[in-house]
Length: 255
Image (cartoon, rainbow, N blue to C red; front, side):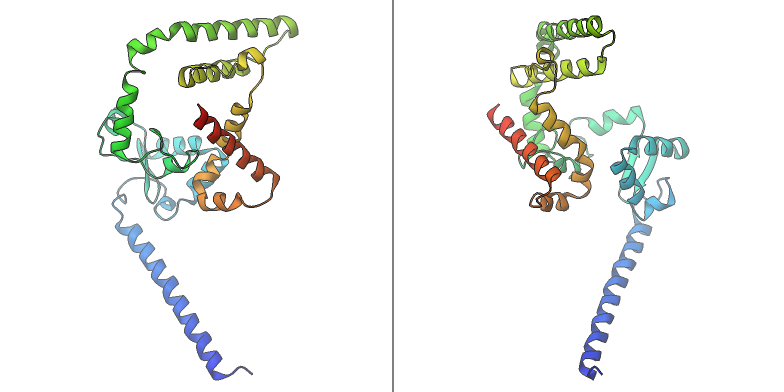
């Protein structure tokens, strides 16, 4: 039979756990009921948890899920306790304009490769403004017009490859060649040199690494802590993903 001291200690621990869990529950209920987003229409479960949204995000069905919500609730929908989705063309300019009062969330930092911020991933307005100004000239209409010959050359190569494959095999994978063309153009305009996937007719290591990491983005954004821990687990798929990330970081540094 256990001593009274042990029983008393167990009882106190149980009471403390119940109090803590009760406090967390009450705090959650209070925050959900007093949330400033409470007046925004959406499914009732979205007030309490983002589980349904997360499930669809991991399952790759989030566009269809959110579209159905907009069809039912209108252009502004609450999709999670602290998230709202807006389907209104007139709101795009206001949300994405320079010096917008709508700041980025940490979501964008989670999807970046490595720890260095980029114009896309940063949540720092000053950093973004500075680097956006540096990009203003290269992506201006006049600068893009001068790039037409480079783009036209890649298009001609893609059409020639499609024609050649169709002649040789009777069918052609148009998606494959458009993907190669787009990737080669991005490489040439961004890094000053094409990846030459059109010439070799297959994906290079850079493209394969990008595909591998992009396919895992839902997990990286939903479970960032687990992803960091997983790097130290000797499982082939995790080790290969870590190698892909390392190669991309090296490529970015060199270029």
